[in-house]
Image (cartoon, rainbow, N blue to C red; front, top):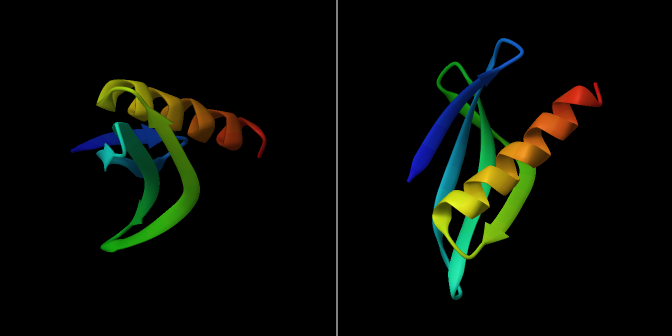
Length: 65
């Protein structure tokens, strides 16, 4: 599953997949047709928990710059 976000004029995807007994979410930045991993991963008991944790990490990272 994937969730698309647009923050500060940039486009990101949060990709989720089953992981052990829960879910793992990773963040990619879309630059035209190319994808660049942001190095942000998060896990959670549910897909939405993992997605939310990854989004929070992304928002904190973007506020730092």
